[in-house]
Amino acid sequence: MGNPLEFVDASQNPDDFSLSSPSAGEHEEEVLASVLKMIQEKNQTRFIRHGNQPFRPCITIKLPVHEVAKLKQLTTRWKLPYTDLIRFLLRATLPLLDSPTEQIRPMLEEHRAAEAARLAGAKMSKNKDLADSAALAS
Image 1 (cartoon, one colour):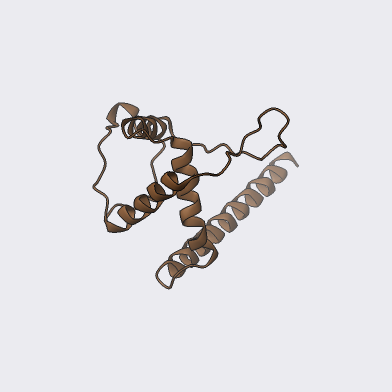
Image 2: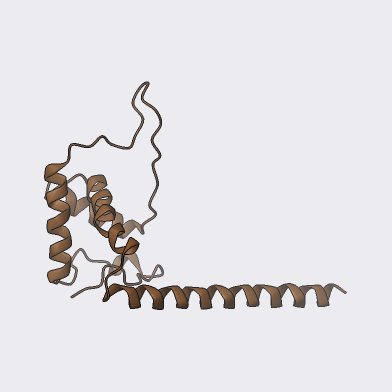
């Protein structure tokens, strides 16, 4: 089973990119089935401004170009609006972040601890660099 949240190396040579990916596991299939069901049942307004309607906030998601190309290619192939796919994937996963299962909670806690340690290390490094710069300036 592939991990959809696994780190993508931004320094990857774009010429090495291919549109094939590892096969999905049963969990990914369940999420996609849920998203497809939401798309079929959608009757909600889109979060954009039309004419005199009140403003509804939108966000921009930054993705590497090769992932955007793959997203557009696959959603076009299956006649899925990629914005709906992203929106419904978020709607399907946000409840898990709000109330994580016993399987997900330790993974989230591990990630949070690793990020806190990384940020603390970056802050200490920045403070050390500032102190070194001040010492050189005097």
